[in-house]
Image (cartoon, helix red, strand yellow):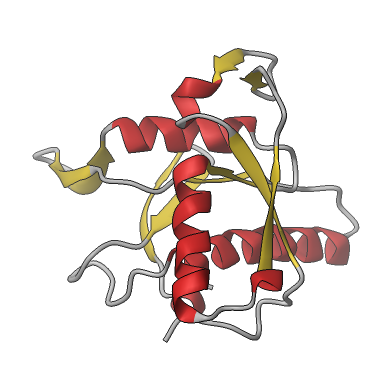
Length: 168
């Protein structure tokens, strides 16, 4: 799916798989719509995999948009790591997403809608449902202020089977 949607796997932290798009040389394209479709397909594939095994397994996906800083950390076991407010917001979006859903920040919603308008991508491809909440809750019941996620959040829905539009 990373190749299909042209996202770059950055790292795995605990049970979180962190991927995204950036400016070259990390990714050749920067299409926010592709990142959202990647998240939606990830949820769909997890559900299909679990159903095939007869298991009840789901996942949560959080997507943010903005700038962060990356670099190599460590001397013995070096790895590339991302830092900054964007990464903190991303962790909040993932940990407070409804099970089996993709939750996005306001900035992500706005940049996806802008790309769709500018490139003539049909608006029916994805829709954003506002989460009308005073605060966010993690699966463990921790209360997180909306500001930690960059403001109000949205759950993404799609009418696509992830086959049609892929950024060119």
